[in-house]
Image 1 (spheres, rainbow, N blue to C red):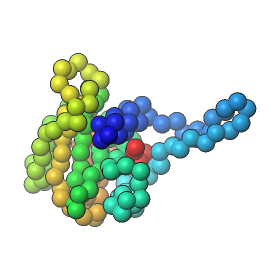
Image 2 (cartoon, one colour):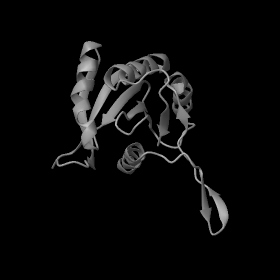
Image 3 (cartoon, rainbow, N blue to C red):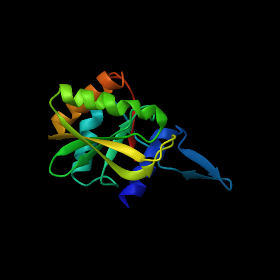
Length: 162
């Protein structure tokens, strides 16, 4: 089940979202739930919802462009994960490892066995950044990752995924 959720989130991240939340269906309007859009300053509110089980899945993520997609997991403390599904994401594994090393944060590689969308016989790698923190610290780390690794800023708009 987790594999399916990760794949769904990656597809949302890599495929982007349409801002039009209405579609025609046999002449009537059908509403499609679209990803919520936030800035990094609003992340703590989304993480509070996540922590207290007010989200649909057992993880959430943010992305502005499909490449900078980071996920948040919670098991008594928050961690960050980055899965390199598309080729443009692959170089960021090393950049994120270096960011973590410079900030005294442990990392490890794992996989959810999702197939990468680039030429690799290996499943897509997932870098787990072991922040083991509360909401304030995880927001600080996520903000720094988005700024220093992905060159985003405080006004960057992110979609909350999945």
